[in-house]
Every structure is written in C-alpha cells, then in structure tokens.
Amino acid sequence: MQSVPIHRLLCASLMLAGLAIATQKYPSLAEELPPISNRFCEVTRFYRVQSPSPAGLVIQLEDGDKRAIANGTLVMVEVVGARGIATFATPYGRTGVIHEKYLRPVRFGKAQFSGKLRVKTLNPDGFVNVRQAPILSSKILGTLANGTLVTPQKIVGEWVYVKSSRIQGYVANAFLICD
Figure 1: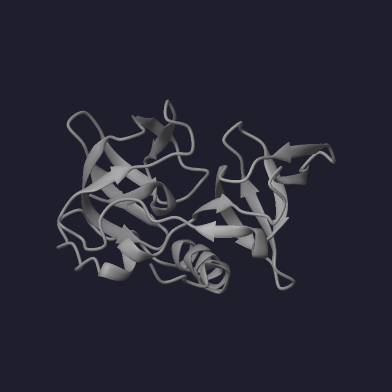
Figure 2: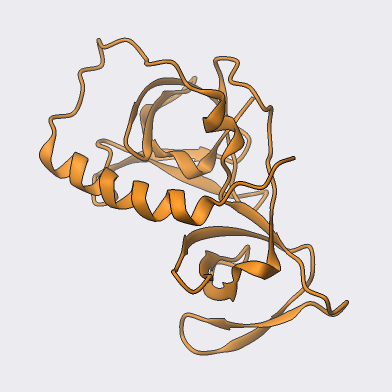
C-alpha cells in the first residue's frame, strides 16, 4: 500500500469545503452522482500508532493530560499542521496530538469503488451522525452504526449524501470506506 501525504490534502480540502458550502447552493437530489474516483478509496484518515519503543508513546490530550497509547492503536487524524504535529481522535473519545512520524496509514475496505460505501468508526460499537445538510452545525436526522452499508447519492465537499435501508442524509466522508 502506498502512503498518501494526507495532511496536505486534508488542510486544503477542509478550507475549500467550508468556503464552498458557505457560498454555494446545495445540489438537488435529482442530480446524477458524479463518478467516485478510486482516489476516494485510497485516501484514509485512519492511522495506527507506531513508535520505536515497544511500550508505545505518551501523548498529550486536548485538556493537557498525558496518556500512554500502545503501538497499533487505531486513531483518526483530523489535521496535520506544518510542523508535522497531528491532531487526532482516540478510540476512547478524546482528542490528542502526536507527531506524524509515529503514524502509519491504514486503509480499510476495497481499493476501488464498487457502488457501495460502509460506515467506519474507531469504536466497533460506534456510530456516525446523519445530517440534514453538509455542514457540522446542521440538524442531526439520526445515526448509522459502524459497518452499515450505504449507497452514495452525491458528494458535496467533505460530505456524502447517502441512503441506507432506514435513513438518508449527509455523512462526513472521513467515516466512509469503499465496500
């Protein structure tokens, strides 16, 4: 698997997505889904912690606390700054920082888009919010459990309008993998 420098891609795309959402009308549901490139399936925000020490690392959490994190722990990178410091979410619901040199990308799902996406969270019992509009402050319509299969209808910036057997709405694309 080829490593993708996701931090450069994420910073720019998050800024552009916010600007696009603020200035553009949301596409109608009648519009045809643009082709999802295989690049969608290659890019990941899931990483495993990997340090030279067999014991893992001590990381700093958002509140200043320090916590040990074992090698192999799955984390979700939110942003990587210019100095290589990554802000990430942990499986135990906390946000912390770590240098990107201690992170190894993990790709789940298939390498090519086959028409379906699957919800992927850090926690096996986790869920994602389904929103009315492609913006974090939008009304939450419901949730989708980790592993739920969905059909993408359209992509709007960093959001995908999806349909499942019981709900439809926008899900942040960071939580979707190719099935």
